[in-house]
Image (tube, rainbow, N blue to C red):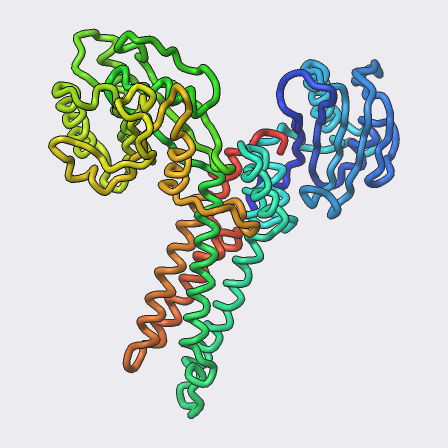
Length: 485
C-alpha cells in the first residue's frame, strides 16, 4: 500500500447535478472524533440518524440522515461515514467543505486535528481501498464500474454476476487446480532419488489436460463478457445515396441522420449505440465515398476512411436500384479495392444490398451471393443480405449476421462481464499451459522448465483477481471510476 492509502478521504458519492438525495462519503481510520464534530453526537453503528448538518458557526446547512459503518464492516473495510442530504450541488459542496474543515480543525481536548490529512478522494479510491482491504478482489472491483456503466440489461446482469464473485470463483478454481499440479512437479524436483514417479502416479498429464479444457470454457465465457461490456464498432460505408443514413435510422429506430436525395448530404459521422440481444453495437454512418471537389465533403470522406480503418466490422452498402449501371458497378469495385488496402484483413465486411423495395424483383431471397461484375475475390465468401431500410424488410437478417460476425452466442446464464485484459491474461495462461504440456509429453521432460511454465501460468491468473498486480495496473483501473465510488 502507498502512503496515500492511509489518508482519510471524503467525496460526493452521487452523480453531479440536481437530485432528490445526495451523499457525501468519508472513509478512514478512527472517524469517531469527526462523527462527533459533524453530527454533535456519537452514532449507533449501521443505523440511520436524522439530524441537522451545521457549519462551523452552528448554522444549519441542511437536514438529513447520517450513517456510521465502523471497520471492518463497511464498503472500504475502514470506518465509513455517509451523510445523506438533499441533492442540490451547492448543498453537497457546502457539506463536503464542512467535512474537510471539521476533519482538519483542532480538537482542543487533545490539541490535534480531529482527522489529520482528510482530503478529497481520487477517482475510484473508495473501491480501491475495498480491494486493498480484501473486501473484494480486483475482478469484482472492475465489475462495480462495469455495472455502473452497463448500457444493456444483459450487460448489467452479467456485471452483477461478476460482482457477486462468479468470475472470481472460476479463476480461483483454475488456480487451485494449477497449484495442485505445481505441487506434484515440485515434489518430483525436490525428491529426485525417490522411486515413486509422482507425476505418473497422479496422472499429471490428465490433470493438465482437464485444466486446459476448463480454461477453454472460461475463456469462451470471458470473450462473451467482453462483448457484452464493450460491444463492437460497426461502420456503414458505400457510395452516396446508397441509403447509409436510412439504414442507421432503421437500425436505431429513430430519425438520427438527415436523409435527402441530394448526394453528399452526410458530411460527418453520425453515431448511435443500439443493442441486439443485449450486445451493444456502436453504429457509425459516414460520408458517401467518391471523388469530390467540395473541400468540406473531402474532409468528411477522409474521416469516413479513418472510421473504416478502425472498425470492428464494416457494412458495405450497395444500391439495388442501380445494380445494373456500369458506372455504379465500377465505383463499387473501386471502393472494394480501397477497402482491401486500408482495412486489416481480419475485419469482417458485410455486403448489404439496400433498396429492395425499388429492385426489379423485390421478392428476391434475403441472403444472396455477391453479384460483383467482375466478381471481387474477397466478396465471394462474405456474408451478404438484401434489405429495404425504408420498409424494414430484411433488417432481422442483418441483425443476425451482425451477431454472428461479433462472435456472439445465445446468452447463457453463465456469462459474466469481463474485460479485454482478462482475456489477454487467460490467453497468456493458455500459452504457458501449452508449453507445460509440450514439456510433459517430451521424452525425459525438463521438470524445471515445466515448473516454471506452471508458475508463470499461475502469475497470469493472479493478475485477474489482483493477487499479483503492479501499482501501475491498479492506477489505470481505478482512474476510470467516478469520484466517490
